[in-house]
Length: 269
Image (cartoon, rainbow, N blue to C red):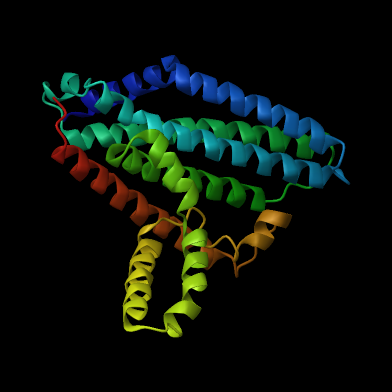
């Protein structure tokens, strides 16, 4: 696969995103919900900084949702319509094709977050507020979160129908699985029969494995909560920022590899 082929695939993916009716509809719904949220928050924010912080947080949240939908559609549409054969009949690797979709998503996510940054910076200067560098950390963290959810949704949509994948992603996440583990801890310890004890033990092992397999969209969110709330960064926050980048890099690489492996086992032509 040459660089020219890769760039051509990225361009084709971007054109597909723009022409896909589901993505356009999802984008319009997300935009409408965002506008309604912005209008309502404008009447509840106590000061200008709270308004900026709330606005950035809301736009990041809706960007996360849109990126998740993008991940569900990006590869699965071509697999279900068997249009992947147009790619595979040319000297273009399947892994390179999956990677081109990720590169396309990176461009979309970066553009959306650049808009967020520009809006926030304009508001900072318009209201004569000192710029806080923690805003860059917050936006960068949101970018990494969106990329993680994209590759996870992309993998789910290659394993099951995109609608089923969306339901799985909503129900099963590290927080919900951890809650399930907590709920079965007491029955596991005080099971009245051997069969019950074995059942809860096996269930505990399965949930524990699932807990470690599922990605954390924001792995050190609690440790960086002060940065997200105040946009102020200290030297104590730097290790968590570095760890977040490393975690996202490993997670994205793993899920891209798994998506390629799954696709290779499917009948695509």
